[in-house]
Image (cartoon, rainbow, N blue to C red; front, side, top):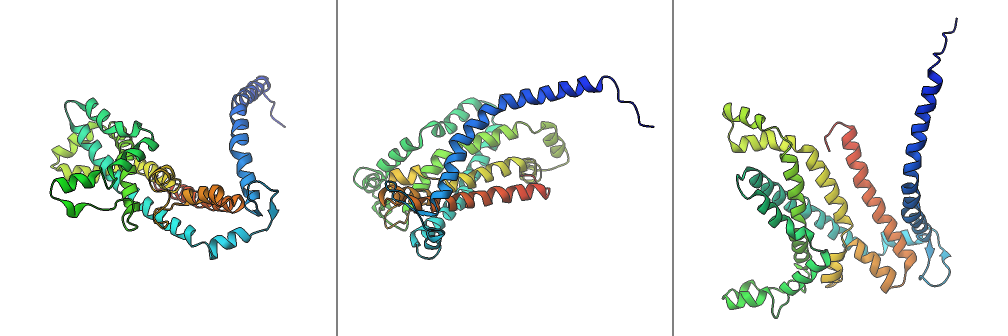
Length: 304
């Protein structure tokens, strides 16, 4: 004999459905704005990547010809891709190490912690364009850091910081590192403050020194924070645009060209909006690979 359904089941299910509909009603405007601002342009870019379009006349469908050119004949794209890999490698190490080391030292300071936080985080507050202009003045060969080197008798250190293809990319990176590493410091500092101090006290009683506590306790406990910072840094590194655009414009000889700057240059200067859309789609796919990689690691049990 079938069991009787409780009399309260109907109203309870109705209230549950009402709550879900109410939640969907609150989320619907944000979803609609996202689809309009992000979804439609993304679909338009995907469609334009299959066309030959100069941004003015009607697009002409050419299939996968843009992607064939990108893979086989566009040497600048591959140079920009390698530069992006160099940029990512630097930012996955230098700012992370600076941020973690500074956060550990500040967390152990008994006085002026707030002052240290403000001083080290202050560069991140500045707009990236402002930082780029400041470092452009610093690298100026006539009145920048080179003049100081010559006045101090260290003329051998003077370089063409933004004019030498061998060091121009790293000179631009230095500006971004100075601007960005304070963000990593704040994130690590917030994570360190969530660690129970009694764990360190117990380790100290057991005879663990400072390095062993850092290596076997701090680093493992910060593993989720490392995952967040590394994923966001990798994504942001592939989307970097403003520093290169303001300081070098991709030169000299495309030595500082990044994929984002090459997309803008192709669309605006070369007036090849269709091919630029293909570049943008490729950049999106590369960024998606990073996200999928981190999601795969999380599903395998790695704390990222």
